[in-house]
Image 1: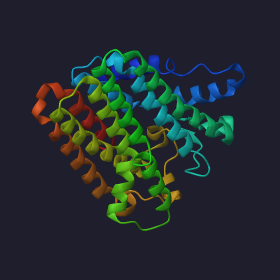
Image 2 (image 1 turned 180 degrees about the horizontal axis):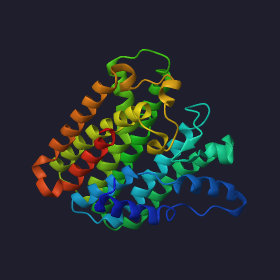
Image 3 (image 1 turned 90 degrees about the vertical axis):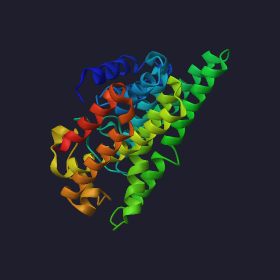
Length: 298
């Protein structure tokens, strides 16, 4: 994702990524270091970018959405720290760097993840306090925070992670496979888009169309990542390849093979683009992004 508009959104988040973290007492400086280590390790910042882009698309000011864009990046980063732990995926590399627990130890990695998760909600709630005199703008922020909470929680990302863990070393159905991907990955992507749409003042049709777009690219994104885990390189992924097979994960390539998985990813990409076809040039960013995400396997 190197197009100019994507990089503009990404740089905006990167510049503010530490701004919304709470001040932590110096006696807990290791916590600050561990949280910052993973936040500044790079990455696509896809969810944050989508949140800002959706806010823009719906007529809002992207800068006012920054607390929520950074909050969703805090949540995503916490999930990666915890995913990499020995009890989960047991990965040594993330984004081309040693994983958090390899640098700071398992206990501190768990606490860094906990710190990032709670900091996300502190950032969003602190922003809401500024809008008590404007009920409409406050409602937008409450809705955005709710979407992020739901997407990250027991009806979203965590639910998908539970199903993912329980499906290891088993033959799972298509229904369970879709459930894992739609929740583990797509739910937070969908939450980012919906939150940005609310912050931008979307109407009902905009929200529905963006919703369909986000669900399709969210599922396509995970399928592409699973394909790259089989056929990609460590440089592309920023972590070791073959980990899904080693951990006996439920993935599209494991169940359907590479060619069928590529076909499904491309089909989902076309569905995502079709969802925003009525907006023509106004949806150019989202259309281009969908193609770029799919092109990683071409």
